[in-house]
Image 1 (spheres, rainbow over the protein chains, first blue to last red):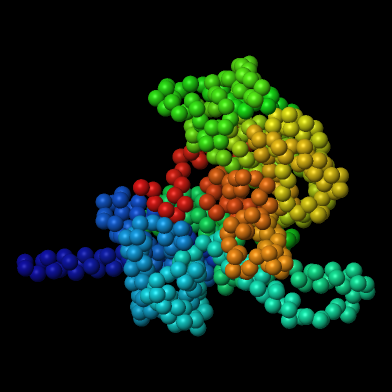
Image 2 (image 1 turned 120 degrees about the vertical axis):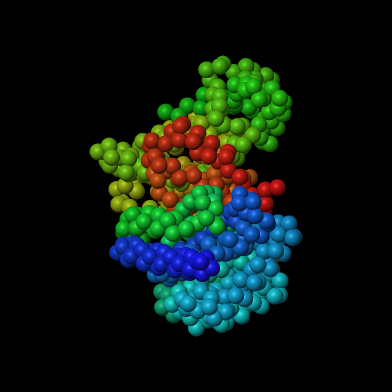
Length: 296
Length: 304
């Protein structure tokens, strides 16, 4: 009789393992079906609602973000299982520095802990061969977080299966400003370097001047190649949790043609069904978009 | 036909008194900061020449569902769905565009009456150049015709018209008309209607970047001085005091921004309406504005 609780526990453990395996199997079947249609190459997430979740569940401050991190790991797992190559997440905005210092500090502490955990053997990085980029104005971070981020980027530089872009101390307008600065500097350096070069194949002085002016003018490609996010293609889908429908200064340049989704679920509540729904919607409008892209 | 019937007032709407307003006396004085300078409410129009009562039938009340103090200053609209609307009705694409112009007239009129200060509409994108030539020619001639017929009324009703976008490919007659319209209406203050033609958000940032690069080359500014404020000054939306839309509406159910007003949309609330543009009228607009008024805007900070 004394063995009964132990037996029940073992049975319980066995049942939950079995359930997990059934869930995993069903999920993989579902992914097989979804993969028969086009799969997005790049998904971006605005992870909104962690604090509201903590309040809603009566948890202490900070627990919401921890729950949010678990939700993130699950979403990454689903994305990479589905064959999505690039995932970008909005971890911390430059605007968020305006929050209370205690909250900012606790977020920085959490990020430091999680960034360091990415290098552990059992982490998702090794499981899926993820190359990690940290995108943003890293100089705004404290030294510890910045050094940890650089360490992770270096350690994962050779991974090539899938990519995770973590936007931290990031603002789209800041990214554009930096790209504009670099474009101006590069252009003026190029002009100085080309110095006495004249267009030999121009027939007239006017034509020659036009060609030189054209070369001197900054082009779209100049700005784009100087964007930090140029290491990835543009996102196909942008998902913002908690029902808010705005971009909040995230990837403004890159999401011009992205499908925007704003499920009402708070970030820690985000799950497989939201991802599947977003992808099915993407597949519905995909053929029309591909036609437009070819025309352009 | 567009008829903004209220002649040049400084305040142009009579608002039906709501019981809660009796407690909030400041509602009587200012619905939004801009109205502080605008004069008196309660059906009394005041202009520099004196006070005049407006006939009741010429005024439009703000719908009960909308709160005047929460009205957006700047609304942007992607007028999508004309082609699909025409197809659904068994008509030609140009019939859809004509119906679209009628819908736009209604929204401009309502915006003016409800206290919105800037209305930006996405008429023609850089991506639209791939459409058949016959459709593009029709669109520009429709735009030219509409502008000619409506411009006097809009000017009389204190509406300022601005056009943004790459005008280099537009027909010369349209360009001349645009310049004239902008010049004649530039001092109007009631509503600024910004029409984006040949416009894309990336193009706008690119031309701002070129402007800045030229200033750096001329030694006017240093590269280190380039910041967000400088870029904002160079964007085409520098024609208005409120370049950042509070609300963006896109019709026809498409869930994307399509490269419209890239930089300016950083904190804009987005609303996606299911209706096709010619069907988007007063009720659709009220729904979008109600949705906006329920949003909690935090700009990256925390709501205390």
